[in-house]
Length: 195
Image (cartoon, rainbow, N blue to C red; front, side, top):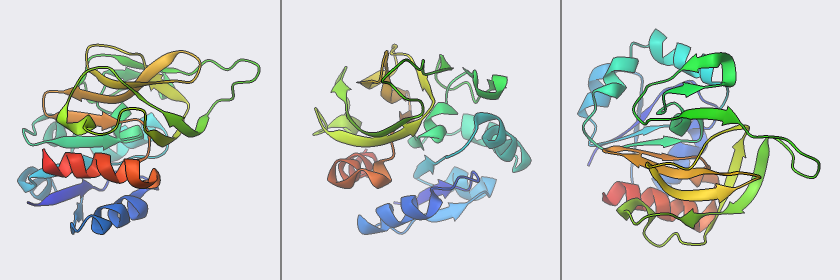
């Protein structure tokens, strides 16, 4: 198996690579289109703003590359958000691989935004990516979220319920950071490798 982690300009790259190495995999870190196409698994990490992340993908010529993949791809945090159609953050057109849009999490007294910290997930439908993850806790850091929809595998609540894990065909996403989520995060990454 060859695993490619896309150089998307995110700040969580080192921790993602380290988490994968702990699972016994040596990932290739690349923004090269041919390398990404040849990977048997692809991970799209991301931290930061949607507009800047899409600009980086365009600069590297990767938008159509990612849209054309047929192997499993896992988007992490902002990487998951980029799989959707549109984000209110920066009013950004995204990759359009999963129907839906990202909206800012509403802030109310006693509920801060960004949603930062540990939270449990609820499984919405079975999928091999989520095997063994019912009720597990994961580490989140985000201000925008996708509502629960047809692509939702697991949801989380911080105010309104939102999509925590999604899938559309070969495109998967985790809103949380599995690389910072201890054994539960390692389990999700291993499930992805085992797909």
